[in-house]
Image 1: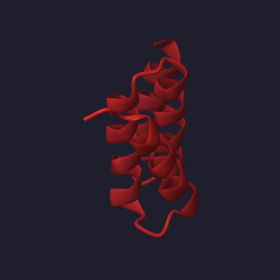
Image 2: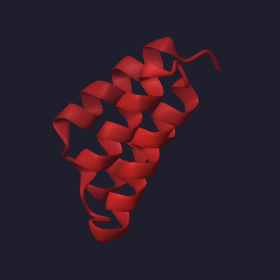
Image 3: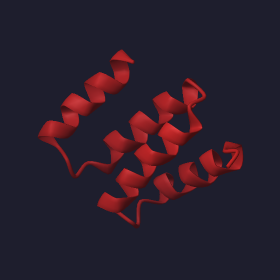
Image 4: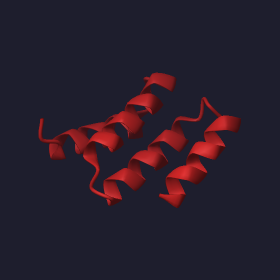
Length: 67
């Protein structure tokens, strides 16, 4: 939870840094919160739709989601 809070603080300064959203998504993956991870990486992809690592991570997340 502390890591997510720190990344969110960084987003205040760097709202267009897709890497921060990627890192938030990775934290949620570690916590097995797949829905939160998906939401975070989608925000990163909204910032940069060409973010290849983000696309790869989104596919990984979606392979673990149960809708």
